Image 1 (tube, rainbow over the protein chains, first blue to last red):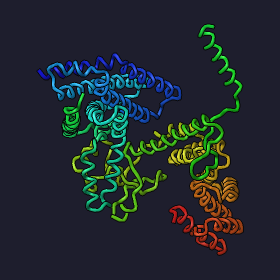
Image 2: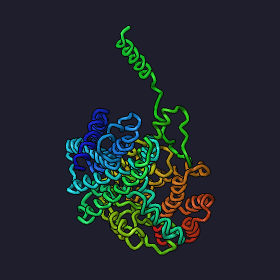
Image 3: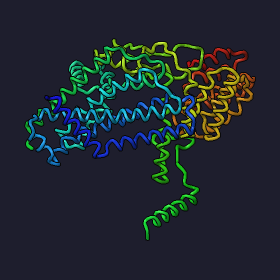
Length: 258
Length: 303
């Protein structure tokens, strides 16, 4: 029963994304990737294969994250603003169901966009005879898990702040949390006892987006695929963190006057 | 009038302006860089384009280093880590030119220095991480196109030219030396006043071609340029000037010109008063049969 509700809500998000031509933007970005690849081809990429692959996974990660953030951070605020939320909530669904369905929809949209970009990038690289190793499949899988976490975070933030602020904060978390974690790791040993406790606490609640990025292994040469336990851990982490963000969003949304 | 007409007219106007604006060019870094932010002060768009090129070039520089380590991110060791006894993850001695300073550690720490537990374990698994003690480098030739690209984007990026030349020079055959010198000469055409490039050319001529007499003109030009700008030289050029004096003094020593050794070392010590190598060379210049080999070894090891 719930599955049908979630499917219907998610389908609505995907259709809305198509109606708003978000995926067209992705297609245009993909076209730009092809154009850039054409420029590289003009100069010749003999010896630049690693650089081109690195550039490709970076572009995929950046654009995929941007699409995920922009899709997830504006769903609920726009439903409220356009008053389309009322007929939705008039149906026999709870507010929690609505959040879960929307989150699934945003995740699916970001996955579609990501896979479209990945296909276009693969096409561009194939035209230069640049191939990836099998670890690329793991990269795609883990990145998709990471995009689900990005969507959950953006959705939660969008209920506590304006859509623009939520999108900005989400992008800061998505691209900055890795740097913060590395800074914490560097400073931990030199920190005092209380500071070490604070560092550990901060590290545990920060979204660990960098764990989902196998880009450097995929781009560089001869790195083995990651063990299965790592992929399972990432799956578990994505589920737990997304659930925590959804609960955080629900805490606010269930009492929100509409 | 129809919109198409106005579009065509606008394109024609822009085309005419563009055709005649032969003096409009991107402004990049000056050949001899000043320390701190470079000023691109003639026009905002040229400034932006210049900075864009410089930034892309610097980005390629960072990535070239990354590819040499097969994607393993490394950083300089901190003072605190040194005091705490953290060992540097230096490169294996493979008998080739050093590609970087040997005081680096991995950005992602090993398990024994990582407080994050399983998060740390997962990051070491998903990122391109490995224990880098006595690490090997990828074949630097892989990165040569990147040095080509970065120096094409920013011909005033001296480190791009010198490091690219060093990568060529890792091939110690005459062919590798010639390719290295060709690359340096190409850089010199774009940066005729660079002390660093002139010194590198002198160094290659002296150490690889074993031709001190041919190296002297390069090094004398570098010395002349560096000494006249000694108060405004940026750090990398100043460091190159110190080497200029050392190599020049060695060239004069090897060609049996003690008076020139004294002149060069005396001038060098005016600029770099605490340079032990120059001091030693000056002392030996006054002693018949001084132990030049020891001095040269000191210079090579930087002690």
